[in-house]
Length: 359
Ligand code: KG4
Ligand code: ZN
Image (tube, rainbow, N blue to C red):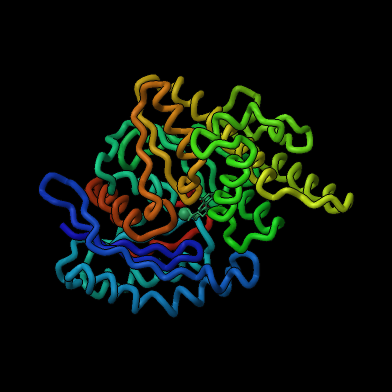
């Protein structure tokens, strides 16, 4: 069967067509994305009103593009999946309204997809997809969450950030050091330069960073975002505030900040915080494999750190390719496929919601 997936929760309009073969293996036939990043960059972040309008302008042509490059006619589809929550309400409404109209026009069942579950479903599009039950880390611009994925459609939230998300913190800090929005990928590169310069190593620099003068410099100390209360929760606001204060101190003293060292130290603290809770999670689920998903799962240092953690703990790790970590329609169609198999068909009353727990 073929399924179309629509995504419009933030600043990417995305439409994808997937095909599930007789064995249930998913194949991406097309994955069209219209990014609004260049528009929002002018404002240093996503402007919800502009995002909604840009989705409206992009979605029809993008749908045509996704169907054409998948060599698929709407009549050949079996279901329509759409992100209904969480996200920016005005942005979500564009995808939901369009998908509803599309489903009615072609007499297809509509499936509501949770954006976060969609991120995890990107793992089903890899060469070696995980099979539930497993555990998952979702790190994105809006989320830092740990889940027990009990079944394809049943997730249990076991840890989360109580304030800022890791991606939001990367974007904010990166912006202050002059990187364009969204700063995550640029900050990753800057941190790499810092790790290499601090350790003198082109490889293995992350593990070696702890022995360096930069790491030991009290200026570059950040409070851990891994809460020390026995929970699997995070708090990135303390780390973010410490970083902003440090940047101000440098500014006031007139000392030029060594941006690469700063990025390395901040990244190290953020990644170690995540690794600490992931290790605790894996201990709680002694046989589970780990899936890492969401935009920040593209972070090269996080990927390397979690790879070595899983190797040390003898666990299977699934990290979607970087092209499927950020928002895309294929991940929504993939989760939609499993929701469809479970009979989760939306009614014509289906709405969008900004909230995490909406149905
Ligand atoms: O999942 P996503 O595309 O959108 C949301 O659902 O939020 O995630 C976007 C986030 C942004 O904060 C962006 O800066 C971050 O992912 N990001 C990265 C990297 N690439 C994207 N953060 C750290 N390192 C990266 N390489
Ligand atoms: Zn996302």
